[in-house]
Length: 210
Ligand SMILES: N[C@@H](CCC(=O)N[C@@H](CS)C(=O)NCC(=O)O)C(=O)O
Image (cartoon, rainbow, N blue to C red):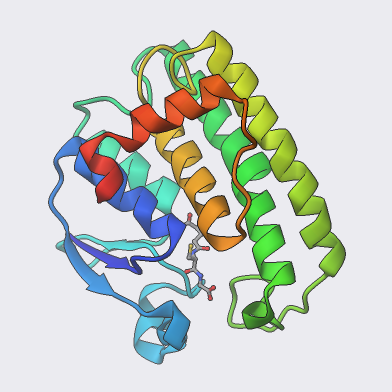
């Protein structure tokens, strides 16, 4: 299996970290999205939405979304489970994946893509031009602060984001926090001890370096 990847981007890191947890080997092909390689005809044929990651199976089938790639990996290699095994565990993982995506990751994306000069007219990842809306960057900062609070409260009552075990929800949350710190220079405030301790534990996993 081949992963079309860009090492600096959060979404491909999700696929790499999940695969590392599962012990799934991937051939990596880098698509330099800073050099606009996602818009070449060759890559558009692979990823019509012009984004990485894309997983290409040995028969040529492609899956061009990180969470769909997780689902595929989970089904073909169920051990160790990262998306829950009981109906309730699966529901809790799904719930937290959606909360992290909508309340955390999208907030970072709003801050970055509506604020940074390099995303002028590229506020949405697309071949089509989308103008920046500066108010979305401001709203994103507030939403990100709320997201940190939400995670902190959750991690005071739960060892991991979706429950007592490490799951894909932890991967999603860790990568979102790292992305916020690196790309928009917003880190969780001091004093959220349960969040800090969780982040250190999850960051110490070998897969976090993938
Ligand atoms: N929902 C997609 C989002 C993928 C995405 O937005 N990828 C970014 C990198 S993190 C990208 O390829 N951006 C291309 C661009 O900015 O033109 C997923 O999770 O795979």
